[in-house]
Image 1 (cartoon, helix red, strand yellow):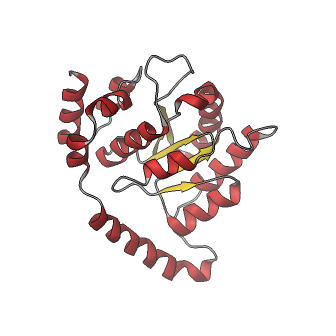
Image 2 (cartoon, rainbow, N blue to C red):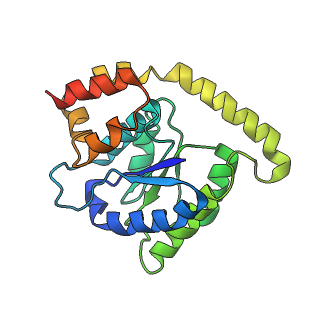
Length: 213
């Protein structure tokens, strides 16, 4: 699984610690981690939590990433932004049990973490345990196990509902504020990381046109 990490501007100074904790936890499990930044609070390209949602949707819908780890001060804004888009199912995760149950019950493809609220002593340990609970086993297996069948059925129903309530990603990219979109894809290493992994030619071509604006 290719897991992307995205940090917004208010918590960008923590990117290195989050990235190293994520890598240490999931790479031995066979997953790959790709760090889209922000890498520091001084980065030229400043991402808001709304732009984290845009970038998450681009990565998921283009196939450039299988899963996204993001967040903001409380995690709430990033979660809401991510869930504004098609094919993104993002959970607000505070502790390891949240991570486990979100993975097993909701079978999502993104998480939004609080990187300021409650982020004190042991924060890196909490992250490590969250990542381990999400990525160490196959998701969508149900919790408790006797609830697996209805939970899996409800996940499929939600996926079908989102197909009706959201338009396709390319249409969104063409209609969203273009300056907001360009800001979301102007990170220091975005082009290098994204275009070599993108599996959707239409999205790739449109993002290239935006970057050339």
